[in-house]
Image (cartoon, rainbow, N blue to C red; front, side, top):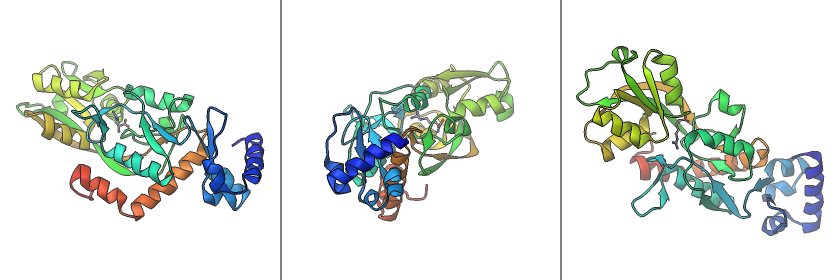
Length: 282
Ligand code: ARG
């Protein structure tokens, strides 16, 4: 919060008399200052806990929605998945409701959050990386992940034979899988695609020799939607998923971290893991 904003905030706090009241206040601004009870105690914690939202009372999410089981559109046209349940649970702790913007290409998500004004957060199976940390803030991590190298079940390729210009290796544009190919299969012909399903479909039909994508997604999609694909290699990249938030909204990151800790503590996180992975050991 800038000094100016902070002064305005403290003044408003005095007027409203209590943080609880303030949280319920409406504002004429496009964005809304929200605070939690803790914010009433000292100026410093008020600074920490206040945040802005693009739409009052709403946690507006943006993601690429072809990433089952994290976020995808189900047969009824609903946006569902692990991240959707997680976002709903976090929003509930903050007294907000969730909205999801229409599908956006994965490589546009960080810029969208960085620019601001459209979505408050991107929760998209997104890995914390140094490059992204220059553009956005991340909450504490909520899940560990690795990459998977996917080939057709009938393929005789190995990691070594795939590192050749004659081999087309699919990935989702701008993902950590995309980066992994560039670093580890530099001789292969990389094929960046907007859509994970299109990549896996291409591997199944022989259009591409392989695809690199997050292991939990590969495992889910291979078992749910494909018959002739295999995880040739599990690649232990040791990635951590977290929620991307604008650097201009540190109070929201702090509030989400607080809510994350609460849902880890009260068992909600385990319930969500159980729902989407059939285990809490993930
Ligand atoms: N974890 C990978 C990354 O952060 C892939 C994420 C793709 N997410 C999606 N919703 N398509 O680069």
